[in-house]
Length: 243
Ligand code: ZN
Image 1 (cartoon, rainbow, N blue to C red):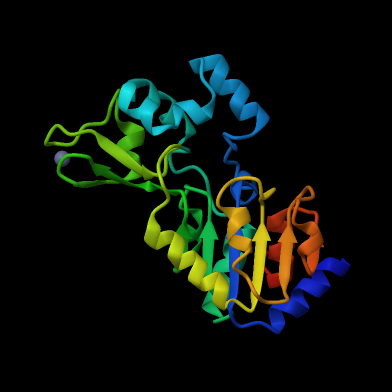
Image 2 (tube, rainbow, N blue to C red):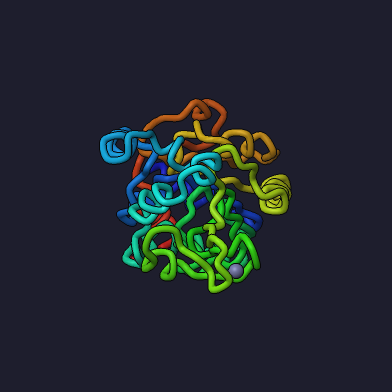
């Protein structure tokens, strides 16, 4: 395929690649996108609210019981595994060609695949902290808890996931921006570029190798140096040589 050959060539000539990824990277690992039409429909049918409400900070504070009921349903209980896209990016980092992965996903799959420098813009389900004493809890604790998960001290254990109405973590955002500004190649994948902050982050890239890989077109296609409308796992897997 012509696009993949071109992508291979661009990767070959780069040494400071940054990857910016969206929900499409995770859906290929079987993780449902709660922002999809189906995800919204199911949330309203079962809980009476759209995901944007259920996953908002004010809802969390008002009705943590229902929040956790919905949130627990989103957790994969460790069943989701990284796909070829995750492994390809880990391999590029290992080869010294990729400096950072910035992702909107909260599933921790990049880290699981071996990526080290990962900026999780929306946080991670893998980290949870007591709101009272700060004690750490893993994902299994939340998945296996009933009702509102409580710390041994009695405080509520809150996922380190950026809820609607909450700001992004400043250091995480700045880290991603710094790497994008220094990048000689920016690969954007699995996002229609309509969810904050992905679209805004692209503007920090100054190079001439902007690659967009997404199943459907995006508003940024015309600014890209290469557009590939296909599965992110298939494209990156092939370009980097992952089985
Ligand atoms: Zn505590």
